[in-house]
Length: 255
Image (cartoon, rainbow, N blue to C red; front, side, top):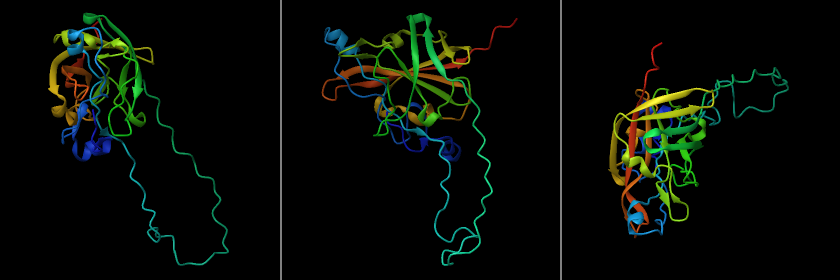
């Protein structure tokens, strides 16, 4: 999935949200993940095999670049000569450290016997969302450490390969067998486990993946799990679709 520049940061989301998870770009970003050869098992496996979700270009939370044009600083005269006055050597206080935030370590889906490690991923050089090379891993979209943490405002995006010609079936191969109401568990590195309920399962042509709706720092807490689907295009060596599973947090059981 290729993620449009406007979706690479929360600032862009505030000014004008363009997409949400897997391939969130208003202009129609490509599906997530690089194209791969299908498994060599048989024709059925070829049709089911797929590359990782299409790349997406999420909003980045970039700081505003300061204006360094000479003369823009009211206290600086670019034409002034060397001053005999010594510069102010008063040490400046370091910027406050960002608070630590939890990160996902594993995802489990009992209905399809998934128990996989989660690793942070960012963007490829071409603007596509990275997908873990190992099909047994799931990637968490976290460009520059600014991804949506599961359970916080916005959509946390997880994506992985459906299969690989050399590695076989991916951990998300059976994602298509899930149903609304099934649950997903996400373990965080702070020792907590979140429970999510699947609310919607949608298969999009990769060219129509709603990137702006998926890759977003705005809106209610939501989880999006993405992989490839549809037919395998042997010319493009890629699947035609992306399968997206949306989930909402489950309230903790009452005591």
